[in-house]
Structure formats: structure tokens, C-alpha cells
Image 1 (cartoon, rainbow, N blue to C red):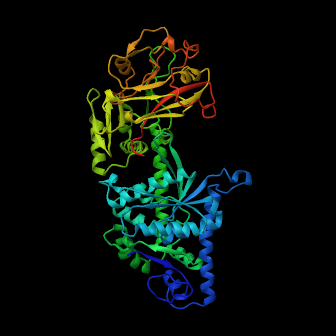
Image 2 (cartoon, rainbow, N blue to C red):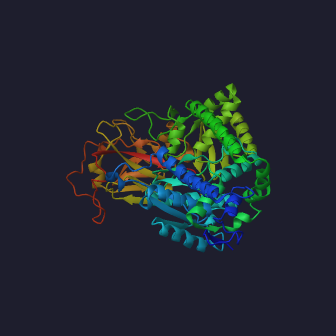
Image 3 (tube, one colour):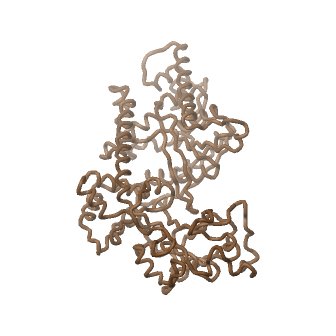
Length: 577
């Protein structure tokens, strides 16, 4: 049964498991023995409170989170605090409210449903936020969708996704987590015991950027901040006692079946008796690992510039279009973080690097996998992947499944694609319509992607007239075979099949929607715009005719799309959010 703790002056030393504000309890919290004058205990308590508040203020300084004027106050984005209701998050919420004020904060709670006390924790967290005058929001998560990852990993993945989605709802682009130095030490040792590499040993960063894919293909970016990472749990406990805070104890934290709990109780407690500063030492090691990993990432990103293949959905086959599949100089890390899906890689270029340095070739491959949104492979699976890439034949197919995605080879191109599911709609039945009213995006889940309407200028060769788009209904339909289009003005039309082949567009990328403007084929992802004279952006043959849009379609919103020209871009879904 979970217990709720509240520190009060009236509690007796040793009563229950509650933290006490009396001298014995404070000394136990710091792992000390003997007696201490009351004045010294008070001074230590104040020092712990100051340490917590100083850590929070430092984050507001380093992340530029302060409001600069009353005029920007209402428009400023909020700071989200993950609030489980336990000691650590309760202290963090209280400290952030004291530093920034309640109107700036939003407390977010995730209900996992794993404990019989989960409802009580939700109620407690809500009450805690209400007492502080802080906006509160919560979400219940279903862990059944995370089968096969282990209960701890499943709960963590579901929790982070819920927190980011809730944060976006409340216009919070900074999420604060209450991890402390004890958590960091546990994480480092767990990773070391699992044989982790530098990335794992780096443990938890004090500040990290996170990008979450959304249904509308516009990635939500959020900063994850851990203000208390350099403070021991004892300092947080002392802060809670000094402030008279109440918190919930999760009974699962004492369950030795969980690896972290076993390490905490059976290893770290006796370790602290012989190595009092073990937290600081392990934290330094974690920072060294993080620095080394950052250097490897810089090397990988530099190497990747000569490996990446740009396949932007437009081909050069005579005409005004831009280049087809080619080696690109754009940073993969930037492209991946932008939310534009997977980025292809040149197999022959990778092999050339492998011949010069097998370590660098392996490093860049790990980086590429991660940048495409996938978790790292096990050592055995990664070694198998290296062997297959070194022996792959260009005119044969390569297909490797990992994390619900498939690595495929087409000619000299390696690319990740989302695994197809049985629930996906049959091609012949897929059809969508849109009366465009200034939409920024058109989500088309049947094709696992989104059509993006990008404002542009009159000199853009791929421009479309906003006036034309407003007059006609857009239709997205599946390929049935035999479709034809012109890729250059004055040139004959050609079949989509031949155009895809000439563009070196892999077969698994060809399941794309055909975009019609009224009854005329307008745009095909992977090929580009139809250059039919009837679709000339400077001439609208139907300008004097009545619009073919149904009367119940939304009116055009000039505030939402303030441009006379736009360009279409197709963005496939990210493999992993």
C-alpha cells in the first residue's frame, strides 16, 4: 500500500517511515551519525533549501526562461513539471513555483494503471498542484501497445510520450524532470552492468532536446531539463522537511525484482559506507562518456555528408525540375530532426569508407540508424548487419527488419521504411478529398504521410497558384496503373511507372497518393508536379467558371495562409516517434 507522507514539527523521531524535521531524521537523511547542535541543523536545512532553489534558478538562467517584460508575459510559453506525487517531483514543483510563480507552471501527471494506488496518486498530485495554484493535467496510458519491451521500458516510453503531448497542449516547450544525483549514479551503474557503450554510460543529460512526430507531420520540439541532477536525494528530502511538503511513496520502489531497486538497496547503501562521494565520481565518469560520444557523433555527421542520398520527391529528367537522387551535403541530424522521415544512404559510398576505416564506417552506421528514429541494435544484430552490407549485391534485394522498420536496398540506395501492417487499407479503396482553405498540412494516414502546403514566391518553378487551389477540390487517390503525366512543359506525357524507375525511386516508396486538382492529376510524390498546360500556375482556364467546391466546405482563411503561391511537399511518417 502506498503511503502519503507529510513533514510536521509534531512528528516524533522514528515514527513510521515519514521524514522528520527533527535533528535525528535530518542527520539520517545525510548519512551521518551522532548529535548536532540545533543551530547547525537549522543552518544545514537552510543550505539544502538554498541549493535546490539555486539549481532551479540556474536552469532558468541557462535556458533563458525568464520573462523579460509584462508585454511578453501573456505570450510566453509555460514550463511543464512532471509530477508523479513522489518526493522528488513534489520538491521540484514547489521550487519552480517559488522561483517562477504559479502562472508560469503546469504540472503534468501520467497514470500508468500499474498499481492499485494509481488513482490515489492522481488525486494527490492534483491536490498538490491545486494548493500551489498551478494548472494541472493528467493522462491515463495503455501499456498494451508497448508489448515486448519490458514493463519498465514500456512505462517509460508511454510516460514520455504522454508528457510531451500534454506539454504541447499547454504550450510548454520546456519539460522539467526531478532526477537527482542518486538517480544518475544508479543509471550509470545499470548501464555499465549491461555492457553499454559510451551513449549508455553518459546516462541522463542535464539538458536535452527532444522531437516528437505528430499526426500533422509538424514535429513538436521540447527541451528536457533536469535541474536537480547534481543534488543528492538527501538534499531534496531536507528541502521537503523544511517546507512541510507531503508526498506519496510508491510501493514498487522497494520491490527487488526491479533491477534499479535491487541496485539501490543491495549495492549502493553498503557502497556509500566506504565511498561517500561515489555519486560525484560516477557523475564525472558519465560526463566524460557524454563528451566522448558527442565527439563520435560529430565525426559521424561529417562522414555522413559523403554518404547521404537526397531523394526529395522531384526529378531532373529534362525541364525545370530540380535534381533527382544524388549525394547531398545536408546534415542528416538536421534533416532527421526536422520531421521529414528517413534519409537514404549510398551503399557504395559507405563501403568506400569501410575500406578506409571499419570503425568509422560502423560509427556512422550506428549514427544513421539512430538519426532515423530507431533504437540501437544489439551487438550481434549490428555485426550481422555489417556483414550483410559488406557482401550485398547491387542487383539483389536486401531486407533487414529492426524495431518495426525494414532496411531495404534498391540499386545503390539503402533506406528505412515503416513496416506495413495488416490493418492498412487496400489501395483500391483509398481516397480522400480536401476543400483547401489555407491548410498548412493535409494528413493522409492511408499512405502513412502528410502533404504540406509551403508558402513560396513567384520565381519558384514548383509554385502553384493559391487561386487555383481555392477554386477546386483536391483529391488523393491510390495508384491503379496506367497513369501518365508530363514532367516538363512541351514534352510528351509518360507513365508513372517509367518515371519512378528513371528517378531511381525505390519500389517500397512508390505507394504514394496521386493528388488531383478537380479531375486533373496535379502532383505525385517522388516525381513532382504535372506540367500539363491546363495546370499552368500563371493561367487558370476555369477562372471565370463557378468553383467546383461544395458549399459546405470551409471558406479560405487568409490569416492562415498569407501568400499567393505555394509549393507541395510530401513527408512520409517517421519510423519511430
